[in-house]
Length: 211
Image 1 (cartoon, rainbow, N blue to C red):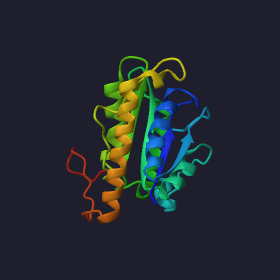
Image 2 (cartoon, rainbow, N blue to C red):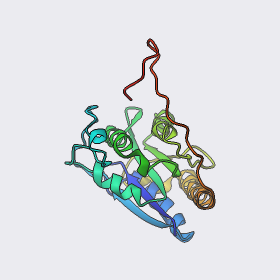
Image 3 (cartoon, rainbow, N blue to C red):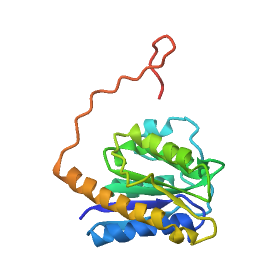
Image 4 (cartoon, rainbow, N blue to C red):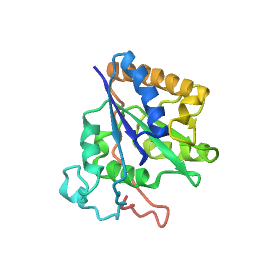
């Protein structure tokens, strides 16, 4: 049985991001996919400081262990796919989620690589299209197939629970879930492509990049 880890990148456990994720989870479960929802909650999240301690230690763990990064990263290693929901603030996704994601992908990218992922932007009115693109960008560097839907993965709502009244948004979530199931089944039948050795470089003098 495949397992999908759904991550609520909002501080609100019962807000509109949770509504969107629960709609996705219901369809995944109906298709025989195991689901787990992880809530980011209200705890502070550190940003990456580029110390490279995670690379030096070689254990797939960020040196900072006082937030959710290492715990979620460990759960990701046991999952077959991911659905991420994040609220939109000032036209961009919740900054705490972006900080967490950058640290997890840098310290333990192997736990995520080649696994299907779907991102959901949740907003009151505007900025969702740009935020949705921002949410997708990191995964495209991780060889992760991005699950789409019949429309962009966007849900609208202001007051807690209001997203359930976004009929098209909820339908988009259900279509997203079915596409995720389709991708998971294909991934289970096919070995992922073999990667060439990475050849990093900057564009200043052709020197190799640290990152």
